[in-house]
Structures are given as C-alpha cells and as structure tokens.
Amino acid sequence: MADVNYEKTGYLHDPFRLFHLTDRQVKNYDCHYHDFHKILLFFSGDVDYFIEGITYRLEPRDILLIGAGDVHRPIIRSAAPYERIILYVSSDFLVSCADDKYSLETCFQKQLPIRSSGRTDIPQDKKTEPFPVLRTSSASVPALFKLCEKLEASLSDREYAAELYSRTLLLQFLIQLNRSFLTDSFRYIETGSSNRKITEILHYINEHLDSDLSIDALSRQFFISRRYLMQIFQQETGYSIGKYINAKRLFWARDKIRHGMSLTDACFSSGFHHYSTFTRSYYRMFRTTPGTLKKEL
Image (cartoon, rainbow, N blue to C red):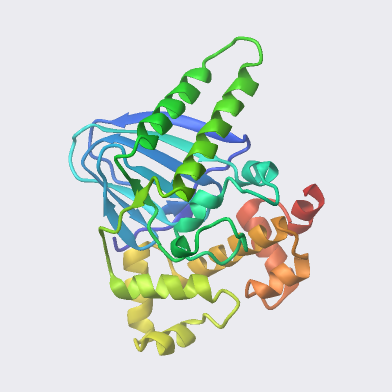
C-alpha cells in the first residue's frame, strides 16, 4: 500500500444517502475517510476490507460499521460481482435523534475503544473490542437487510409524505441495528490480518489524543526509529502520522462539542495547543467553524 494517499472524500448535506452498487471488474480504491458514518451491507464478491489498520475477509451478509473519520478501503481480489448497499448517515442527524437514554451512534462506538461519548448504555464487555464487521446467523440479519431494501425502494416513491416515510424506515433500521448490538445478536468477527505494531500504535493514538503524539514521543513509546515508524505507518494506513492524528483530534473535539463541552475545553483536551490553530484546522476539515457548530446545537 505504499504511495497511497489518504484523503477525506465527499460531503453529506442530507440526513442520509443510499447506494446499491455492483462492480463486475477489479477496481483499485485508495484509503480514505468521511466526516459521516458509513454502513455497508455486503451481498457478494471476493473482497477484503481494510479498516483502521486491520484487513477483514468479507462473507455474504456481513455488515460493516465504519465511523466518521475511520480510514478504510475495499480490496477487490477478483472480478466476481462485488454487490453491496452503502448507507451514508449524517452524524448530525443521529445526534439530533439522541436523548439522555439512547444514542443511535452507539453501534459505531465499537470500532475503537470507547473514549469520547461517555455513555452508559454500552455493555462493559463490549467497550474495548475493535471489530467493526458484524457476522451472525441470527434472525436479526435478514430483518436488517429487508429493512434496508425497503428503504432503498422508498427512495423512488413519489407518494404522499415520501420523504418522511423514507426517514421513518431509516430510523427503524438504525434502531434495530442498535438493538441487535445491545442484545448480543451480533458477533463481531476477530479474524482480521494486521500489522500488530501498527494496530498498537493506532490504539495508543486514539487513547491519548490529548498527550504528546509527536514522532519522537511515539518512537520512544514503541521502541522504533522515527524513520521506520513513519515508513510503516504510511505503508499500512496510506496516511502520514501527523495528518492521521490531526483528523482524529478534530473528530474527537467535534463529538465533545456536540455533547456540551465548551469550545476552549474541546480545543485543549483534544491536544491542540492554540485555539487559532484548532479553528483553522477545524474549518479545513469540516468547512465550518466550531463556533457555528456550538450555535446550532
């Protein structure tokens, strides 16, 4: 994966977008991330999926949960038809649906150790499992696929209150997805190949965003040279360490602001040393300012 550039792709101006896609030839995808959540329902294909340093071998009826800011890309192994439904969901929309008792973002919190939401509705034994691929034979999977297919069909509906109907189906799907997660209906697969050192580094970064994460500090922490650290990080993730850390800090700060933290506290607790640097970086990432986000809450 050397020389792959890791970029943010796309902006989501609606609560959600749905695409039903089938590739019938081998395509190469670069590593990338979004500032919205991504749910992928996998139907068929000869596909591995790279997510945050780990590569997963997909099987039909797998469901992938890729949170905002997570580095990912599919790896197409052959020309076997790669069919999937991709559902992009706005984090702002999910936050607007939450209250003190529940959050529809709960299912996304399992990809990395829970550190930003502070919620209590996530079982203790699930808080440190970094596995974003759901695989199960339970009855909840056919129901979820059926709901998503109904949602897809509703998007061509021109009847009365069609938009409201589609949004209602989306909420049904997300509620059922989170219920299945919370009731252990899903098994998160652990059969992914990875560079163990990179996985440890990614885990450490996401657990210590407010700490010194300079190249020197990380090389000392993991007993590897600066040059080797930068080389393997780029090779495995398609991104430089600095850009990865900056993106993770900004997503963490945005989440904290949405949950009531002051702008100043979000700035410094996410690892930025100057508020002006924080606001400029935030605008480049999200095309808006943290102050605007705060006013919209």
